[in-house]
Length: 602
Image (cartoon, rainbow, N blue to C red; front, side):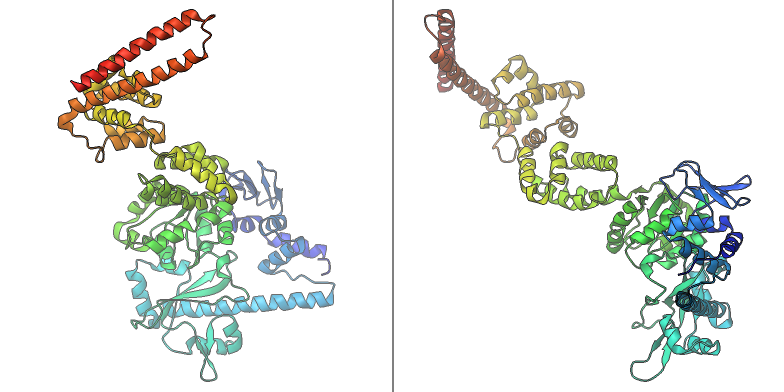
């Protein structure tokens, strides 16, 4: 491809108004003689981009980006200099000569093909729109009115009506010099399967053009007005050489003009949701046109907004589609938030039945999208066995994989560990473990969260003291806690005594919340509901005495074993005093143990 003459470049820069060019990507606000907006070239939170219409340049005072209209388009689209010049030249009607005849001819053919495509789709859009406002479009206008879509909104989006019949658009295009095969390539007509000829793709439908940010009509969608069951409710253009649905957002060509007044985009599922919300004053509503939100669509949104509020339908499919937005939004660096509706509701019906103020309130209270998605998985697993919690973690890990910020990732892990009652450090190790080591990491999590292995007497004592909390003070005053092998259990009884003294009751939920160790918390929770212990509160006194006596016997046995072990290690000659002391203690403990046995016999 030959060099573009200098005078052509100058003409492009003269015609391409810098404010118009930048505004196609960034929401701008007037600031004196210039305009300001969020810089699209770095993570900008305070408007740092300044556009000077007089000088025909832009400059970011935070990251240093700057230049003219051509440079801006090059940066935004990732195009080469010639590609950016030719794009702006096409848009502003500047002829670009080419010194290479073959390359020039190829470029001219591409431009002619694209221009012809947009010319034809533009003709079709005009045909549909004229029909909507004619006598033939009365039923379509009535339907729009019933859906709360006023004339201003309909005109903003170029809504139209495809008349009932097989060859209305086909005949119109024929009269404009467009043959059927070319119209078919544009996705406007279809070839007949059983006979020669073509017929209109859209018939007896409200038609909405899909317009890109450059205001080119790329495709169409249509909502039927027919009552027949075998007619699809919605029908969309097929993908063509100049239309890939995953690269465009419905309504963005209108919404981009309003981002200066708000910091968020409102992402909805359907075209009628877009119309209804714009009519209700929510002018930044856009839709992904029946696809899961793509990386390209999220990247488009990031040019205009920092935050995306996902407001999909309230049914299960809407919830699933909402979760699927996370990867694209995270990759584009957009803050994702979510509002949900009742199962039978969507943004369109909600705003028509409840009003704009109710939706504004929902938007103000929108939740974090990742937090919401995590909660959808975690909430059902709360209180379950640790294996069920780990199953939930496996699902949550897929969500957290998309989180780009390390700080945000840690925040979610802390929150999940609290909800699932799992130790954060073990949970982190499990989530980060490579596939080959996850089994070992899982085993450690399970082991750490199993109930504590208390012997029967210790567990029995815990059951009766939790049932009779006014006895805990006496238990501690008698220093029976020294009889326990599990020191954490002893510490817990001191905690429970303080809690009971403060509240004059054992508020079980509050008490459990104060226990840091998950395994002890599980044990205490089970002791609070002793179905399998055989405990009978009417016999609490006897249960208590039996448990104390058993603990005393086991303490005596442990102490005798420890004394005997030390005696065997002593040198009788050099450590005679210690030997005599241990022998005396041994005799006292034997007498104490025998007295316990005698008491139990009596």
